[in-house]
Image 1 (cartoon, one colour):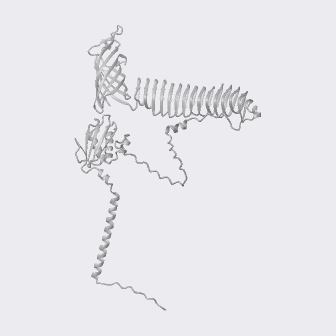
Image 2 (cartoon, one colour; image 1 turned 90 degrees about the vertical axis):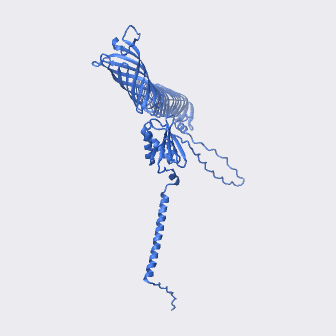
Image 3 (cartoon, one colour; image 1 turned 180 degrees about the vertical axis):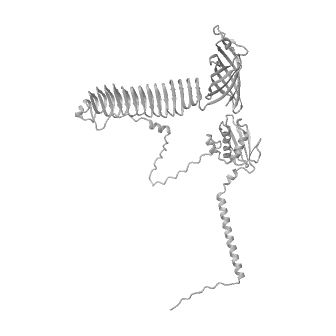
Length: 605
Protein backbone atom coordinates (compact mmCIF):
# COMPACT_ATOMS: atom_id res chain seq x y z
CA UNK A 1 0.00 0.00 0.00
CA UNK A 2 1.40 3.28 -1.10
CA UNK A 3 1.17 6.11 1.34
CA UNK A 4 1.30 9.71 -0.01
CA UNK A 5 4.03 11.93 1.12
CA UNK A 6 2.75 14.48 3.64
CA UNK A 7 4.77 17.64 4.08
CA UNK A 8 4.92 18.61 7.66
CA UNK A 9 4.55 22.29 8.55
CA UNK A 10 7.52 23.75 10.27
CA UNK A 11 7.04 24.34 13.89
CA UNK A 12 6.94 27.96 14.98
CA UNK A 13 10.15 29.32 16.19
CA UNK A 14 10.26 29.92 19.82
CA UNK A 15 12.37 32.72 21.03
CA UNK A 16 13.16 34.25 24.30
CA UNK A 17 10.36 35.54 26.57
CA UNK A 18 11.60 39.11 26.10
CA UNK A 19 11.27 38.82 22.28
CA UNK A 20 7.76 37.34 22.64
CA UNK A 21 6.67 40.28 24.82
CA UNK A 22 8.07 42.78 22.22
CA UNK A 23 6.15 41.10 19.37
CA UNK A 24 2.92 41.12 21.40
CA UNK A 25 3.34 44.83 22.19
CA UNK A 26 3.80 45.72 18.53
CA UNK A 27 0.62 43.81 17.60
CA UNK A 28 -1.42 45.55 20.27
CA UNK A 29 -0.17 48.95 19.10
CA UNK A 30 -1.08 48.12 15.52
CA UNK A 31 -4.56 47.08 16.53
CA UNK A 32 -5.03 50.30 18.56
CA UNK A 33 -3.95 52.43 15.57
CA UNK A 34 -6.44 50.72 13.27
CA UNK A 35 -9.21 51.27 15.83
CA UNK A 36 -8.31 54.96 16.15
CA UNK A 37 -8.39 55.45 12.36
CA UNK A 38 -11.79 53.82 12.16
CA UNK A 39 -13.13 56.09 14.92
CA UNK A 40 -11.83 59.22 13.16
CA UNK A 41 -13.39 58.11 9.87
CA UNK A 42 -16.78 57.54 11.52
CA UNK A 43 -16.64 60.95 13.24
CA UNK A 44 -15.79 62.64 9.96
CA UNK A 45 -18.69 60.96 8.19
CA UNK A 46 -21.09 62.03 10.96
CA UNK A 47 -19.91 65.66 10.77
CA UNK A 48 -20.22 65.67 6.97
CA UNK A 49 -23.80 64.42 7.17
CA UNK A 50 -25.02 66.65 9.96
CA UNK A 51 -23.18 69.86 9.07
CA UNK A 52 -25.38 72.64 7.50
CA UNK A 53 -24.73 73.67 3.90
CA UNK A 54 -22.04 76.19 3.26
CA UNK A 55 -24.60 78.78 2.10
CA UNK A 56 -26.59 78.42 5.31
CA UNK A 57 -23.45 79.01 7.34
CA UNK A 58 -22.66 82.04 5.26
CA UNK A 59 -26.17 83.42 5.78
CA UNK A 60 -26.18 83.09 9.55
CA UNK A 61 -25.43 86.32 11.42
CA UNK A 62 -22.04 86.65 12.95
CA UNK A 63 -21.37 86.25 16.62
CA UNK A 64 -21.08 90.04 16.89
CA UNK A 65 -24.84 90.33 16.20
CA UNK A 66 -26.93 92.34 13.80
CA UNK A 67 -27.54 96.07 13.60
CA UNK A 68 -31.06 97.46 13.12
CA UNK A 69 -31.55 100.88 11.51
CA UNK A 70 -35.07 102.37 11.77
CA UNK A 71 -35.63 104.85 8.96
CA UNK A 72 -39.08 106.46 9.15
CA UNK A 73 -41.07 103.42 10.29
CA UNK A 74 -44.77 103.85 11.18
CA UNK A 75 -45.02 106.00 14.27
CA UNK A 76 -47.15 103.39 16.06
CA UNK A 77 -44.18 100.97 16.11
CA UNK A 78 -41.80 100.98 19.06
CA UNK A 79 -38.24 100.55 17.66
CA UNK A 80 -37.06 98.85 20.86
CA UNK A 81 -39.95 96.36 20.68
CA UNK A 82 -39.04 95.61 17.06
CA UNK A 83 -35.38 95.15 18.07
CA UNK A 84 -36.32 92.70 20.84
CA UNK A 85 -38.62 90.71 18.53
CA UNK A 86 -35.96 90.49 15.82
CA UNK A 87 -33.39 89.33 18.39
CA UNK A 88 -35.68 86.54 19.56
CA UNK A 89 -36.29 85.44 15.97
CA UNK A 90 -32.60 85.44 14.97
CA UNK A 91 -31.29 84.08 18.27
CA UNK A 92 -28.55 86.72 18.42
CA UNK A 93 -27.97 90.20 19.77
CA UNK A 94 -29.59 93.06 17.83
CA UNK A 95 -28.57 96.65 18.43
CA UNK A 96 -30.22 99.86 17.23
CA UNK A 97 -27.95 102.00 15.08
CA UNK A 98 -28.34 105.40 13.47
CA UNK A 99 -26.76 104.25 10.20
CA UNK A 100 -25.42 101.06 8.64
CA UNK A 101 -21.83 100.04 9.41
CA UNK A 102 -19.74 98.69 6.56
CA UNK A 103 -18.85 95.04 6.92
CA UNK A 104 -21.53 94.25 9.52
CA UNK A 105 -24.86 92.47 8.98
CA UNK A 106 -27.50 95.21 8.99
CA UNK A 107 -31.30 95.34 8.82
CA UNK A 108 -32.88 98.63 7.66
CA UNK A 109 -36.58 99.21 8.41
CA UNK A 110 -38.29 101.89 6.33
CA UNK A 111 -41.95 103.03 6.37
CA UNK A 112 -43.83 103.49 3.09
CA UNK A 113 -46.42 106.24 2.37
CA UNK A 114 -49.28 103.73 2.01
CA UNK A 115 -48.80 102.28 5.49
CA UNK A 116 -46.59 99.35 4.47
CA UNK A 117 -42.99 98.75 5.59
CA UNK A 118 -39.87 97.75 3.68
CA UNK A 119 -37.16 95.71 5.39
CA UNK A 120 -33.75 95.21 3.74
CA UNK A 121 -30.87 93.02 4.88
CA UNK A 122 -27.24 93.66 4.02
CA UNK A 123 -24.94 90.74 4.84
CA UNK A 124 -21.24 90.93 5.65
CA UNK A 125 -20.41 89.68 2.13
CA UNK A 126 -22.30 92.67 0.58
CA UNK A 127 -25.26 90.50 -0.37
CA UNK A 128 -28.47 92.59 -0.10
CA UNK A 129 -32.14 91.61 -0.21
CA UNK A 130 -35.32 93.47 0.72
CA UNK A 131 -39.10 92.97 0.84
CA UNK A 132 -42.18 95.15 1.33
CA UNK A 133 -45.18 93.84 3.28
CA UNK A 134 -48.39 95.06 4.93
CA UNK A 135 -48.20 94.96 8.72
CA UNK A 136 -51.10 94.57 11.17
CA UNK A 137 -52.42 97.67 12.91
CA UNK A 138 -51.71 96.18 16.33
CA UNK A 139 -48.13 97.26 17.30
CA UNK A 140 -47.25 93.91 18.96
CA UNK A 141 -48.43 91.88 15.97
CA UNK A 142 -46.66 94.28 13.63
CA UNK A 143 -43.37 93.80 15.51
CA UNK A 144 -43.73 90.01 15.30
CA UNK A 145 -44.46 90.21 11.56
CA UNK A 146 -41.35 92.32 11.00
CA UNK A 147 -39.28 89.89 13.10
CA UNK A 148 -40.53 86.96 11.05
CA UNK A 149 -39.60 88.80 7.86
CA UNK A 150 -36.16 89.59 9.27
CA UNK A 151 -35.51 85.93 10.03
CA UNK A 152 -36.51 84.93 6.53
CA UNK A 153 -34.39 87.67 4.95
CA UNK A 154 -31.32 86.55 6.88
CA UNK A 155 -31.99 82.94 5.84
CA UNK A 156 -32.91 84.06 2.29
CA UNK A 157 -36.43 82.62 2.52
CA UNK A 158 -38.26 85.88 1.88
CA UNK A 159 -40.01 84.74 -1.27
CA UNK A 160 -42.16 82.29 0.68
CA UNK A 161 -42.86 84.86 3.38
CA UNK A 162 -43.83 87.52 0.83
CA UNK A 163 -46.26 85.07 -0.73
CA UNK A 164 -47.77 84.43 2.70
CA UNK A 165 -48.34 88.18 3.12
CA UNK A 166 -49.93 88.41 -0.34
CA UNK A 167 -47.04 90.29 -1.95
CA UNK A 168 -45.01 89.26 -4.94
CA UNK A 169 -41.27 89.49 -4.32
CA UNK A 170 -39.42 92.08 -6.32
CA UNK A 171 -36.61 89.72 -7.33
CA UNK A 172 -38.15 87.07 -9.53
CA UNK A 173 -36.37 84.22 -11.23
CA UNK A 174 -37.28 83.33 -14.78
CA UNK A 175 -39.47 80.24 -15.16
CA UNK A 176 -37.63 77.04 -16.01
CA UNK A 177 -37.48 76.23 -19.72
CA UNK A 178 -40.06 73.73 -20.94
CA UNK A 179 -38.84 70.14 -21.13
CA UNK A 180 -37.35 69.17 -24.43
CA UNK A 181 -39.70 67.25 -26.67
CA UNK A 182 -38.42 63.82 -27.74
CA UNK A 183 -37.38 63.49 -31.33
CA UNK A 184 -40.03 61.77 -33.48
CA UNK A 185 -39.22 58.26 -34.54
CA UNK A 186 -38.05 57.77 -38.10
CA UNK A 187 -40.87 56.88 -40.50
CA UNK A 188 -40.64 54.03 -43.01
CA UNK A 189 -39.87 54.92 -46.58
CA UNK A 190 -42.91 56.28 -48.40
CA UNK A 191 -44.94 56.92 -45.23
CA UNK A 192 -46.43 60.38 -44.55
CA UNK A 193 -46.32 62.03 -41.19
CA UNK A 194 -49.65 62.78 -39.54
CA UNK A 195 -50.41 66.50 -39.10
CA UNK A 196 -49.71 67.81 -35.60
CA UNK A 197 -52.73 67.82 -33.32
CA UNK A 198 -53.48 71.17 -31.70
CA UNK A 199 -53.46 71.11 -27.92
CA UNK A 200 -56.92 71.46 -26.48
CA UNK A 201 -57.00 74.12 -23.74
CA UNK A 202 -58.35 73.05 -20.41
CA UNK A 203 -61.82 74.48 -19.74
CA UNK A 204 -61.99 77.31 -17.24
CA UNK A 205 -63.84 77.07 -13.93
CA UNK A 206 -66.55 79.38 -15.29
CA UNK A 207 -66.97 77.19 -18.36
CA UNK A 208 -67.21 74.05 -16.21
CA UNK A 209 -69.84 75.67 -13.99
CA UNK A 210 -71.80 76.85 -17.03
CA UNK A 211 -71.72 73.32 -18.42
CA UNK A 212 -73.06 71.96 -15.14
CA UNK A 213 -75.83 74.55 -14.77
CA UNK A 214 -76.86 74.83 -18.43
CA UNK A 215 -80.33 73.33 -18.98
CA UNK A 216 -80.56 70.35 -21.30
CA UNK A 217 -81.71 70.72 -24.87
CA UNK A 218 -85.50 70.92 -25.46
CA UNK A 219 -87.18 67.70 -26.54
CA UNK A 220 -87.28 66.64 -30.16
CA UNK A 221 -90.73 66.59 -31.66
CA UNK A 222 -90.59 62.98 -32.80
CA UNK A 223 -90.70 59.48 -31.33
CA UNK A 224 -88.98 56.72 -33.31
CA UNK A 225 -91.17 53.65 -33.66
CA UNK A 226 -94.38 55.47 -32.76
CA UNK A 227 -97.42 55.72 -35.01
CA UNK A 228 -98.26 59.26 -36.16
CA UNK A 229 -101.92 60.26 -36.62
CA UNK A 230 -103.54 63.56 -37.48
CA UNK A 231 -106.40 63.28 -34.99
CA UNK A 232 -107.02 61.26 -31.86
CA UNK A 233 -109.83 61.38 -29.34
CA UNK A 234 -110.52 59.66 -26.00
CA UNK A 235 -113.42 59.62 -23.57
CA UNK A 236 -111.24 58.09 -20.87
CA UNK A 237 -107.59 57.07 -21.03
CA UNK A 238 -107.33 54.04 -23.34
CA UNK A 239 -111.02 54.39 -24.22
CA UNK A 240 -111.37 55.95 -27.65
CA UNK A 241 -109.01 55.98 -30.59
CA UNK A 242 -106.29 54.82 -28.20
CA UNK A 243 -108.23 51.55 -27.92
CA UNK A 244 -107.70 50.97 -31.64
CA UNK A 245 -104.34 52.68 -32.29
CA UNK A 246 -102.74 51.85 -28.96
CA UNK A 247 -100.77 54.10 -26.60
CA UNK A 248 -97.59 54.44 -28.70
CA UNK A 249 -99.10 57.16 -30.89
CA UNK A 250 -98.09 60.73 -31.72
CA UNK A 251 -101.13 62.93 -32.33
CA UNK A 252 -101.27 66.09 -34.38
CA UNK A 253 -104.56 67.09 -32.75
CA UNK A 254 -105.89 65.46 -29.60
CA UNK A 255 -109.40 65.76 -28.10
CA UNK A 256 -110.30 64.31 -24.70
CA UNK A 257 -113.47 64.31 -22.64
CA UNK A 258 -112.92 63.01 -19.12
CA UNK A 259 -109.34 62.08 -19.88
CA UNK A 260 -106.97 60.99 -22.60
CA UNK A 261 -103.60 59.25 -22.94
CA UNK A 262 -101.08 59.39 -25.79
CA UNK A 263 -97.32 59.16 -26.30
CA UNK A 264 -96.80 62.59 -27.88
CA UNK A 265 -98.50 65.70 -29.17
CA UNK A 266 -97.06 67.85 -31.98
CA UNK A 267 -99.87 70.37 -32.27
CA UNK A 268 -102.89 71.02 -30.04
CA UNK A 269 -104.57 69.05 -27.28
CA UNK A 270 -107.95 70.01 -25.79
CA UNK A 271 -109.59 68.33 -22.82
CA UNK A 272 -112.34 68.81 -20.30
CA UNK A 273 -110.75 66.64 -17.64
CA UNK A 274 -107.17 65.38 -17.71
CA UNK A 275 -104.70 65.31 -20.61
CA UNK A 276 -101.85 62.79 -20.19
CA UNK A 277 -98.80 62.66 -22.49
CA UNK A 278 -96.06 60.12 -21.80
CA UNK A 279 -93.11 61.02 -24.10
CA UNK A 280 -93.13 64.67 -25.29
CA UNK A 281 -95.24 67.75 -25.93
CA UNK A 282 -94.49 70.10 -28.82
CA UNK A 283 -97.42 72.46 -28.98
CA UNK A 284 -100.18 73.47 -26.55
CA UNK A 285 -102.44 71.82 -24.01
CA UNK A 286 -105.74 73.25 -22.73
CA UNK A 287 -107.80 71.55 -20.04
CA UNK A 288 -110.33 72.27 -17.39
CA UNK A 289 -108.73 69.86 -14.93
CA UNK A 290 -105.06 69.03 -15.47
CA UNK A 291 -102.33 68.74 -18.06
CA UNK A 292 -99.81 66.03 -17.27
CA UNK A 293 -96.69 65.60 -19.39
CA UNK A 294 -94.55 62.82 -18.00
CA UNK A 295 -91.58 64.06 -20.04
CA UNK A 296 -90.19 67.41 -21.20
CA UNK A 297 -92.72 69.87 -22.66
CA UNK A 298 -92.05 72.37 -25.43
CA UNK A 299 -94.87 74.87 -25.80
CA UNK A 300 -97.66 75.87 -23.43
CA UNK A 301 -99.81 74.26 -20.77
CA UNK A 302 -102.99 76.08 -19.71
CA UNK A 303 -105.49 74.70 -17.22
CA UNK A 304 -107.79 75.70 -14.42
CA UNK A 305 -106.15 73.18 -12.14
CA UNK A 306 -102.73 71.50 -12.41
CA UNK A 307 -99.97 71.69 -15.02
CA UNK A 308 -97.16 69.17 -14.69
CA UNK A 309 -94.05 68.56 -16.81
CA UNK A 310 -90.60 67.05 -16.28
CA UNK A 311 -89.03 70.00 -18.10
CA UNK A 312 -90.48 73.15 -19.62
CA UNK A 313 -89.46 75.25 -22.61
CA UNK A 314 -92.40 77.61 -22.84
CA UNK A 315 -95.12 78.56 -20.36
CA UNK A 316 -97.43 77.14 -17.74
CA UNK A 317 -100.58 78.97 -16.67
CA UNK A 318 -102.79 77.38 -14.04
CA UNK A 319 -103.67 77.27 -10.39
CA UNK A 320 -100.75 74.94 -9.64
CA UNK A 321 -97.74 74.67 -11.94
CA UNK A 322 -95.07 72.04 -11.28
CA UNK A 323 -91.95 71.33 -13.32
CA UNK A 324 -89.76 68.48 -12.10
CA UNK A 325 -86.78 69.82 -14.01
CA UNK A 326 -85.45 72.98 -15.64
CA UNK A 327 -87.67 75.85 -16.79
CA UNK A 328 -86.91 78.09 -19.73
CA UNK A 329 -89.87 80.39 -19.97
CA UNK A 330 -92.53 81.29 -17.41
CA UNK A 331 -94.86 79.87 -14.81
CA UNK A 332 -97.97 81.82 -13.81
CA UNK A 333 -100.34 80.62 -11.12
CA UNK A 334 -101.24 80.54 -7.47
CA UNK A 335 -98.44 78.06 -6.73
CA UNK A 336 -95.40 77.57 -8.95
CA UNK A 337 -92.72 74.95 -8.33
CA UNK A 338 -89.59 74.30 -10.39
CA UNK A 339 -87.22 71.58 -9.25
CA UNK A 340 -84.56 72.69 -11.74
CA UNK A 341 -83.02 75.88 -13.00
CA UNK A 342 -85.43 78.68 -13.93
CA UNK A 343 -84.32 80.75 -16.89
CA UNK A 344 -87.29 83.07 -17.10
CA UNK A 345 -89.99 83.97 -14.59
CA UNK A 346 -92.33 82.64 -11.94
CA UNK A 347 -95.43 84.78 -11.34
CA UNK A 348 -97.82 83.71 -8.62
CA UNK A 349 -98.82 83.72 -5.00
CA UNK A 350 -96.14 81.20 -3.97
CA UNK A 351 -93.08 80.55 -6.13
CA UNK A 352 -90.45 77.91 -5.41
CA UNK A 353 -87.35 77.31 -7.55
CA UNK A 354 -84.95 74.64 -6.33
CA UNK A 355 -82.52 74.60 -9.24
CA UNK A 356 -79.14 76.01 -10.17
CA UNK A 357 -80.36 79.51 -11.11
CA UNK A 358 -83.50 81.63 -10.98
CA UNK A 359 -84.09 84.78 -13.01
CA UNK A 360 -87.40 86.29 -11.83
CA UNK A 361 -89.97 85.45 -9.17
CA UNK A 362 -92.98 87.69 -8.49
CA UNK A 363 -95.49 86.65 -5.84
CA UNK A 364 -96.64 86.86 -2.26
CA UNK A 365 -93.98 84.33 -1.16
CA UNK A 366 -90.92 83.42 -3.22
CA UNK A 367 -88.34 80.75 -2.36
CA UNK A 368 -85.25 80.06 -4.48
CA UNK A 369 -83.05 77.22 -3.23
CA UNK A 370 -80.46 77.68 -5.95
CA UNK A 371 -76.88 78.68 -6.69
CA UNK A 372 -77.94 81.97 -8.31
CA UNK A 373 -81.13 84.01 -7.86
CA UNK A 374 -81.46 87.15 -9.95
CA UNK A 375 -84.77 88.80 -9.01
CA UNK A 376 -87.47 88.06 -6.43
CA UNK A 377 -90.43 90.42 -5.97
CA UNK A 378 -93.00 89.62 -3.28
CA UNK A 379 -94.11 90.06 0.29
CA UNK A 380 -91.73 87.35 1.52
CA UNK A 381 -88.64 86.34 -0.48
CA UNK A 382 -86.14 83.65 0.50
CA UNK A 383 -83.02 82.81 -1.51
CA UNK A 384 -80.84 79.93 -0.33
CA UNK A 385 -77.79 79.24 -2.47
CA UNK A 386 -74.40 80.50 -3.55
CA UNK A 387 -75.66 83.85 -4.87
CA UNK A 388 -78.81 85.97 -4.71
CA UNK A 389 -79.22 88.87 -7.12
CA UNK A 390 -82.13 91.20 -6.28
CA UNK A 391 -84.91 90.81 -3.73
CA UNK A 392 -87.83 93.27 -3.52
CA UNK A 393 -90.55 92.69 -0.93
CA UNK A 394 -91.74 93.29 2.60
CA UNK A 395 -89.36 90.67 3.99
CA UNK A 396 -86.24 89.44 2.19
CA UNK A 397 -84.05 86.61 3.45
CA UNK A 398 -80.94 85.52 1.55
CA UNK A 399 -78.96 82.66 3.07
CA UNK A 400 -76.49 82.84 0.20
CA UNK A 401 -72.75 83.19 0.00
CA UNK A 402 -73.18 86.40 -2.00
CA UNK A 403 -76.24 88.70 -2.02
CA UNK A 404 -76.64 91.50 -4.55
CA UNK A 405 -79.44 93.89 -3.51
CA UNK A 406 -82.35 93.78 -1.08
CA UNK A 407 -85.20 96.32 -0.91
CA UNK A 408 -87.93 95.79 1.70
CA UNK A 409 -89.12 96.65 5.18
CA UNK A 410 -86.83 93.97 6.63
CA UNK A 411 -83.73 92.56 4.91
CA UNK A 412 -81.57 89.68 6.14
CA UNK A 413 -78.45 88.52 4.30
CA UNK A 414 -76.70 85.57 5.96
CA UNK A 415 -73.66 85.16 3.76
CA UNK A 416 -70.08 86.24 3.20
CA UNK A 417 -70.88 89.44 1.27
CA UNK A 418 -73.82 91.71 0.59
CA UNK A 419 -74.15 94.44 -2.02
CA UNK A 420 -76.96 96.86 -1.08
CA UNK A 421 -79.65 96.77 1.61
CA UNK A 422 -82.38 99.42 1.75
CA UNK A 423 -85.18 99.01 4.29
CA UNK A 424 -86.33 99.83 7.78
CA UNK A 425 -84.25 97.00 9.28
CA UNK A 426 -81.16 95.69 7.50
CA UNK A 427 -79.07 92.80 8.82
CA UNK A 428 -75.95 91.42 7.11
CA UNK A 429 -74.02 88.74 8.95
CA UNK A 430 -71.07 89.11 6.57
CA UNK A 431 -69.33 91.99 4.84
CA UNK A 432 -71.34 94.71 3.10
CA UNK A 433 -69.66 95.61 -0.19
CA UNK A 434 -72.01 98.47 -1.08
CA UNK A 435 -74.20 100.21 1.50
CA UNK A 436 -76.95 99.90 4.08
CA UNK A 437 -79.68 102.54 4.35
CA UNK A 438 -82.40 102.08 6.93
CA UNK A 439 -83.67 102.90 10.37
CA UNK A 440 -81.62 100.09 11.98
CA UNK A 441 -78.55 98.59 10.29
CA UNK A 442 -76.32 95.73 11.42
CA UNK A 443 -73.30 94.32 9.61
CA UNK A 444 -70.08 92.53 10.45
CA UNK A 445 -68.21 94.92 8.12
CA UNK A 446 -69.58 97.87 6.15
CA UNK A 447 -68.09 100.85 4.32
CA UNK A 448 -71.41 102.77 4.41
CA UNK A 449 -74.18 102.20 6.94
CA UNK A 450 -76.59 105.11 7.26
CA UNK A 451 -79.45 105.06 9.73
CA UNK A 452 -80.66 106.07 13.14
CA UNK A 453 -78.97 103.03 14.73
CA UNK A 454 -75.95 101.47 13.03
CA UNK A 455 -74.02 98.56 14.49
CA UNK A 456 -70.87 97.43 12.69
CA UNK A 457 -69.35 94.56 14.65
CA UNK A 458 -65.87 94.85 13.13
CA UNK A 459 -66.07 98.62 12.53
CA UNK A 460 -64.83 101.64 14.42
CA UNK A 461 -65.61 101.87 18.13
CA UNK A 462 -64.42 104.89 20.12
CA UNK A 463 -65.05 106.31 23.58
CA UNK A 464 -65.49 110.10 23.46
CA UNK A 465 -65.57 112.68 26.24
CA UNK A 466 -66.35 116.25 25.15
CA UNK A 467 -67.56 119.55 26.48
CA UNK A 468 -69.53 122.50 25.10
CA UNK A 469 -69.36 126.21 25.78
CA UNK A 470 -72.84 125.93 27.33
CA UNK A 471 -71.47 123.96 30.28
CA UNK A 472 -72.56 120.55 29.01
CA UNK A 473 -70.08 117.71 29.58
CA UNK A 474 -70.75 114.44 27.73
CA UNK A 475 -69.37 110.90 27.56
CA UNK A 476 -70.41 108.56 24.77
CA UNK A 477 -69.70 105.85 22.26
CA UNK A 478 -68.98 106.37 18.58
CA UNK A 479 -69.51 103.27 16.43
CA UNK A 480 -69.78 102.82 12.70
CA UNK A 481 -68.19 101.99 9.39
CA UNK A 482 -65.04 103.37 7.80
CA UNK A 483 -66.61 106.71 6.90
CA UNK A 484 -69.89 107.01 8.85
CA UNK A 485 -70.71 106.58 12.51
CA UNK A 486 -73.37 106.98 15.20
CA UNK A 487 -72.88 108.80 18.48
CA UNK A 488 -74.65 107.83 21.73
CA UNK A 489 -73.91 109.98 24.77
CA UNK A 490 -74.96 110.80 28.31
CA UNK A 491 -73.86 113.76 30.41
CA UNK A 492 -74.76 116.65 32.65
CA UNK A 493 -75.04 120.45 32.56
CA UNK A 494 -73.73 121.87 35.81
CA UNK A 495 -74.07 125.57 34.97
CA UNK A 496 -77.29 127.52 35.40
CA UNK A 497 -79.65 127.66 38.30
CA UNK A 498 -79.88 123.85 38.55
CA UNK A 499 -78.04 120.80 37.17
CA UNK A 500 -79.76 118.91 34.37
CA UNK A 501 -79.14 115.46 32.89
CA UNK A 502 -78.35 115.40 29.17
CA UNK A 503 -78.81 112.65 26.57
CA UNK A 504 -77.48 112.86 23.02
CA UNK A 505 -77.81 111.03 19.73
CA UNK A 506 -75.95 111.84 16.54
CA UNK A 507 -74.79 110.90 13.07
CA UNK A 508 -71.50 111.80 11.47
CA UNK A 509 -68.88 111.15 8.86
CA UNK A 510 -65.10 110.83 9.02
CA UNK A 511 -62.36 111.88 6.64
CA UNK A 512 -58.92 110.41 7.38
CA UNK A 513 -56.24 113.02 6.65
CA UNK A 514 -53.20 111.02 7.74
CA UNK A 515 -51.93 108.50 10.25
CA UNK A 516 -52.47 110.95 13.12
CA UNK A 517 -55.01 113.37 11.68
CA UNK A 518 -58.73 113.06 10.97
CA UNK A 519 -61.78 115.30 10.56
CA UNK A 520 -65.36 114.55 11.70
CA UNK A 521 -68.56 116.26 10.52
CA UNK A 522 -71.37 115.50 12.98
CA UNK A 523 -75.04 116.33 13.59
CA UNK A 524 -76.17 115.83 17.19
CA UNK A 525 -79.39 116.23 19.14
CA UNK A 526 -79.27 116.86 22.90
CA UNK A 527 -82.18 116.62 25.33
CA UNK A 528 -81.96 118.26 28.76
CA UNK A 529 -83.97 116.59 31.56
CA UNK A 530 -84.95 117.66 35.05
CA UNK A 531 -83.20 115.38 37.57
CA UNK A 532 -86.27 114.99 39.75
CA UNK A 533 -88.92 114.19 37.13
CA UNK A 534 -86.82 113.24 34.03
CA UNK A 535 -89.07 115.58 32.06
CA UNK A 536 -87.50 117.33 29.06
CA UNK A 537 -87.04 121.03 29.67
CA UNK A 538 -84.94 121.94 26.60
CA UNK A 539 -83.52 120.47 23.40
CA UNK A 540 -80.38 121.41 21.54
CA UNK A 541 -79.56 120.75 17.88
CA UNK A 542 -75.88 121.02 16.99
CA UNK A 543 -73.79 120.85 13.81
CA UNK A 544 -70.06 120.61 14.40
CA UNK A 545 -66.83 120.18 12.47
CA UNK A 546 -63.93 118.92 14.58
CA UNK A 547 -60.32 118.14 13.82
CA UNK A 548 -58.70 115.25 15.71
CA UNK A 549 -55.00 114.60 16.38
CA UNK A 550 -53.62 111.36 17.78
CA UNK A 551 -51.16 112.19 20.52
CA UNK A 552 -50.78 108.52 21.47
CA UNK A 553 -51.71 105.34 19.58
CA UNK A 554 -54.84 104.91 21.74
CA UNK A 555 -55.69 108.55 22.48
CA UNK A 556 -56.57 111.62 20.42
CA UNK A 557 -57.70 115.16 21.18
CA UNK A 558 -60.26 116.92 19.03
CA UNK A 559 -61.94 120.27 18.80
CA UNK A 560 -63.62 122.67 16.47
CA UNK A 561 -66.49 125.11 15.88
CA UNK A 562 -70.17 124.34 16.16
CA UNK A 563 -73.53 125.95 15.45
CA UNK A 564 -76.30 125.48 18.00
CA UNK A 565 -80.08 125.90 18.03
CA UNK A 566 -81.90 125.51 21.36
CA UNK A 567 -85.61 124.98 22.06
CA UNK A 568 -86.91 125.42 25.61
CA UNK A 569 -90.14 125.30 27.53
CA UNK A 570 -89.41 128.87 28.52
CA UNK A 571 -87.13 131.57 27.20
CA UNK A 572 -84.83 130.99 30.17
CA UNK A 573 -84.52 127.27 29.40
CA UNK A 574 -83.40 128.07 25.83
CA UNK A 575 -80.70 130.52 26.95
CA UNK A 576 -77.90 127.95 27.15
CA UNK A 577 -75.09 130.06 25.70
CA UNK A 578 -72.93 131.82 28.31
CA UNK A 579 -72.12 134.74 25.99
CA UNK A 580 -75.58 135.32 24.60
CA UNK A 581 -77.70 134.13 21.72
CA UNK A 582 -80.23 135.53 19.27
CA UNK A 583 -83.81 134.41 18.60
CA UNK A 584 -84.25 131.88 15.87
CA UNK A 585 -86.86 134.06 14.18
CA UNK A 586 -89.72 131.55 14.03
CA UNK A 587 -92.85 133.26 15.32
CA UNK A 588 -92.84 135.55 18.30
CA UNK A 589 -91.51 132.97 20.76
CA UNK A 590 -88.26 133.81 22.57
CA UNK A 591 -87.75 130.17 23.59
CA UNK A 592 -85.86 129.38 20.37
CA UNK A 593 -82.26 130.62 20.37
CA UNK A 594 -79.21 130.19 18.11
CA UNK A 595 -75.50 130.91 18.53
CA UNK A 596 -72.03 129.71 17.38
CA UNK A 597 -70.07 127.58 19.81
CA UNK A 598 -67.03 125.42 20.29
CA UNK A 599 -66.41 121.74 21.10
CA UNK A 600 -63.36 120.26 22.84
CA UNK A 601 -62.80 116.63 23.76
CA UNK A 602 -60.69 113.49 23.83
CA UNK A 603 -61.19 110.18 22.05
CA UNK A 604 -59.96 106.75 23.08
CA UNK A 605 -59.44 104.09 20.39
